[in-house]
Length: 281
Ligand code: AMP
Image (cartoon, rainbow, N blue to C red; front, side, top):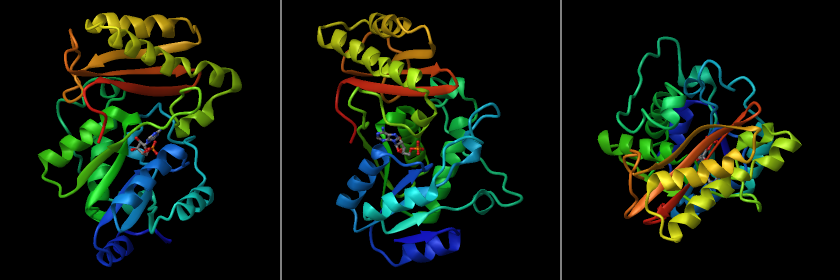
């Protein structure tokens, strides 16, 4: 496994392989990230993972400075998973003096996470476009866990004709349903015990949907009711939206994305489920 810190070295390494899968991450890896690596290994002759805590996707009051990092451990996990290249640039390599360009994906970025985290998806779209240009992957792998991010990246690729196939893989969960996240490491034992209610609340919406409920507000209320049972949880939003446009629905006919963001102490958690329709590719 080759660990690469510069754009030039990454381009040179990429030129030596035919098809390449890319798994972009911010590190502090868990089984969710590794499921993406496994999928990429199965579908490409070579696999690159990137580890870059991208400062431009964090707001001023967010957790950039305390975001968990453990590069030696991450490299061990990626090596064991059979990754060929790890691209881990520092911030100055990605954003040298004079850097002054942003990619603004319209429409799907102004709601949900975009409404609560202004500027977040400009940071995401810009860094992902840079990673695509540097690594030039054949395929790039993202998690359904960050549902809106996947929608934004698919739109970025379509709108700018980027020559990459975007693959979105299912969310990996703990046994109690909590979606794996690097940010779970912030949770105290008490908060960790409360956190599975997020998945339980989303599952309540799924149960209502499976029982025939098609009124989107009824589904949102099922989620809110269960979240409200935990007073230590502060809910940012509960959404039942079109999975492609992310517009809130009145009625669910074919499918919907039910998603929520909630804060437990200093930790903000997001999760979602797809109702009906097809699972993510
Ligand atoms: P991050 O390091 O949090 O930026 O995540 C890197 C990639 O891993 C993103 O595409 C995430 O959607 C994906 N990911 C994060 N958590 C999970 C999970 N629990 N299951 C599947 N994919 C995940």
